[in-house]
Image: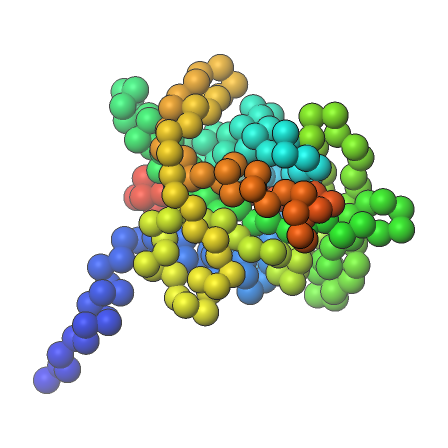
Length: 250
């Protein structure tokens, strides 16, 4: 005779598949760090990151935010903004075609889901003797070492750069995540996450179309921290997107 299902088990079973996947990816990032494509595939971890279309599979793309004025660019720049990339890049395997919604309302619904399925890794900048950023990275053979991330003084307050190996989690200050995830994140993980509310924001989709979406307030959270405390020398960020229900069901 089967045992009665516990309340906890029932609650866990009702968590939507996409949220379960999002928590899984969050846990993986906090455990393994921000991985290169090569390392992620080796471990069987799938996610959409800001270097999905980068031909170099052994690097991690980053945004260096040097000043408050660069925060918006780091998120919304059509070429390399974290939220913009989250809109345009499907989580599917290479070679599979993306099926887009047919109406404007369906498009907005799907793009909103994409920005709501993002996680933003935030790291303080620690300069080495050459003025570049120093991060603890993991090499292909699993060894941890200090790695340099090239920096300059960007006139716009933000620039794209890269780490040459997977980035270890001890570099993280915290991970930003949408507020709705709070009730699903285990307490031992939640203390490493800053949950943010959402508000309407206009983003550029496919380089030409402006769409207003309900976006996590990453910009406000970064702007109130940059230049202060551990971020007095700026910050490095890396955006990830987890699968939406549409991604999972397609």
